[in-house]
Amino acid sequence: MIAVGLCRAEEAGEFDHVQTGPLALLWQPDGPDTDRLDHCLAAQEQLGAFLPFSPRQAPKLAAACDWIRPRIAALSAALDDLAGQGEMLVTLQPDTTGSGPRSCSGRDWLRERTLQHARLRAMQDCLRDLLPGAHLLPTTPGAPVEATVLLPPDLMHFHARTLHAACPEGVDCRISGPWPAFGYAAALTARLTEPT
Amino acid sequence: MPDPQLLSPRHALSGSDRTLVDLVDRVLDRGCVIEGELWLTVAGIDLVYLGLKAVLTTPDRLLRGEA
Image (cartoon, rainbow over all chains, first blue to last red; front, side):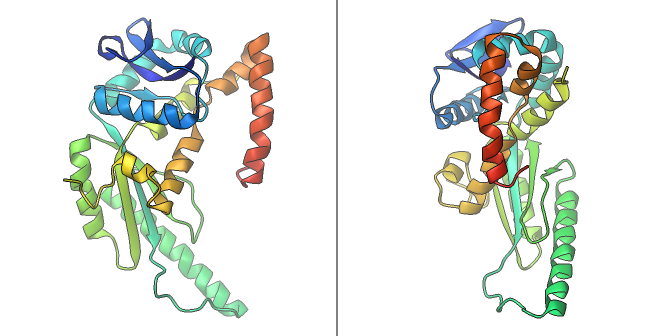
């Protein structure tokens, strides 16, 4: 049995789960990570608050119970933070359609690289301005700027429209959600887990 | 009616938008570190199993240039 994520015990309902104090640990039989991802999406859609494990690195049920027991207070607080919220994923990248041939001289290459750095900073600033709570994922010049942000699902439509409208010319904007809070959960578990 | 400016997760995972699928992949890949702690602290069978999993995972990440 593989752990899928955590919710409040009173909300677990028909999901297969084991109770640990005020928390319910959802599980499913061992299987492909796509099944666990489906399970996470269903839990996100149906539960008031859901803290997912990574579908690709989910622990076995017994191991997850051992990890949860000494951290119940912190995990309960995390579920309070997640109540009524999901994660929105945002990607900004230069729209390269219609661009000319790549430069080949050294000077032009350096100039292009400088421009890429400037574009990257501009896109990051744009995202920070539009979504102050967004967590920017590590990136490199020339690669897309990616971010996750926790929001109530109803607000995501509003923010998606705002982001699309404010997106600078020549920048492609892609947005999806509400996702289970994978980014939030990864940061939280890293914070709660200290190597011994 | 679906919002064309906000893709639903299930639509994003359908594979119609490669960039989005790549982003979801990266978010999922970040994962959690529960197993890392178990590998370090739990003795017995779990240690062997999780240690073996770590060994199998690391070369894969190296090949993907994430190290």
